[in-house]
Every structure is written in C-alpha cells, then in structure tokens.
Image 1: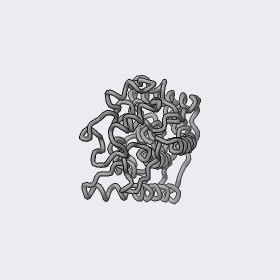
Image 2: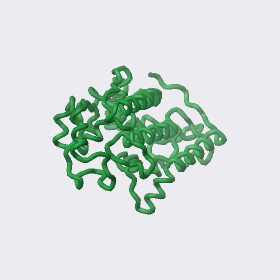
Image 3: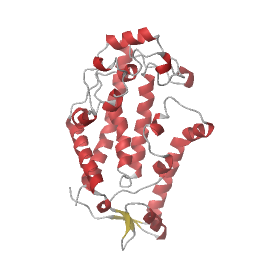
Length: 293
C-alpha cells in the first residue's frame, strides 16, 4: 500500500468533526458516567469500560487519522499529544513516530484481520460460552452473583452438556469453569488467536473496538466510535443469551436452550458479522498504512 497526498482540512472542516465526535461519545457514555458517580454496577454495560480498559476521556478525544493535516492556530494544541508533528500547512499525526514494538503489534494485527477476512464464519456456538462460565459453580462463585440465573444449577449444567460447546475465542474460553473446559470442542490458547479467530464470533467482532483503540492516536476517531457502538450492541445480545435473568433491568432473554432461541441468536450473530465487515476492512487498511515506511 502506498501513501496518498495528505488532505488539508481547514478549521471550518475539522472543528465540526471534532465537536460531533465529542457529542456522540458524551451521549453514548452518559448513563455509565451517571452510574459510576453513584457507585452503581451494571452487569451488561460495565464490561465495555472495565474489560476494555480505554478511558472515556480517551474515547472522547478526537483524532483525524493518518494523512490528514489540520490547519489553523488551534490545531497546534494537538502537538501536546503523542504522535503529532507540525508541517508547513498545519498539524498531523505521523505514522513514522510508531515505535518498533508497536509496529510488530500492527504487523501481527494486520495478519489477524486479513486471515479473518477470508476465513469462513461459524454460526453454531449459540452463546454457550457464558453458560460454560457458570457451569458446575456454586452460587457464590458466579461472576454476576448479584443477578439470578434463569435455571437451577443442575438444569444449567444439563443445557451445557446437551449442546455442542465450540468456542474459538481465547478471551472467552479462559473464563470457562474448570469442569467446562473439556466440553469445548477447541482448547484455544493465547498463541492460537491468529489461527482460530473467526468473524462470526460475537467476541471477535466486539474486539474490533479493542483493535481500534490500541491503534490510537492513528485511528480516525469516527472509526473507533463505530466499533464502540458495535461492541455495545453485541454485549447486549451476549448477555441476553446468557444464563442470567436480567429482565428486571430490561433485557429479555434469548432462550438459546430452545430451537427458536438458537435461531434468533444465529440471525443476530449474522447481522453483527455483516456490520463488522466494513469496520474490519477499515482497520486492516489502517494497519497497512501504518506499516508503510
């Protein structure tokens, strides 16, 4: 991939983009910020801010992406951020500032995303990873033990045992209970990620948000926000399909223990895969741009 001539944005062009992004993130995170101020936990949405350790202030900070020059006196405030430099026309983020260890990460990510683009998607897991995370646990061991399970422990175990558990995502599998691990068709390890990650997986599509923010400040912030919204929507379905009963806070269960529930889960899984495709392609293009010397 070759670089293109930088695009020069006047203040009248880039400042509204920055304001729109800041307003978008402010709206997307308002409820969480209110809960955090009250010390309230949320079994669905906290995941987006705890597991994905990207601060709201960082998410709200606008970046234009590579090959964009910001004109005007105010653009010089970007020079306080890592990765930016001044040119004759204005200020821009400079991929040449990417240190060697981060270039290695970008190269690894490029290979991962490229492999996922061509690897067949799999839609037969039906969200059983959340069930495997509580399989054969006592009530006090359950992660979200402030919330009831939809079935008694024995029935939850029966549902897991009656279905094929086939999770390919290491960061879900590592939270399986010890007795659930042998039930999984695969035994993924961290080093298997590039070989096993596939685009039908809800968690792999949620992780597009992780890859977007890990490439900051080079990721256009609109792309990071798009990935965040996808992760939020997937998280809702992930927990609706889980064994937890979250109806009290407005999350109707997707009963994957039934044929109708599994069909609904697969339909939603396919929809998320379709939404993730252009985001993954944009991230792949960004990786290729960052690796140009």
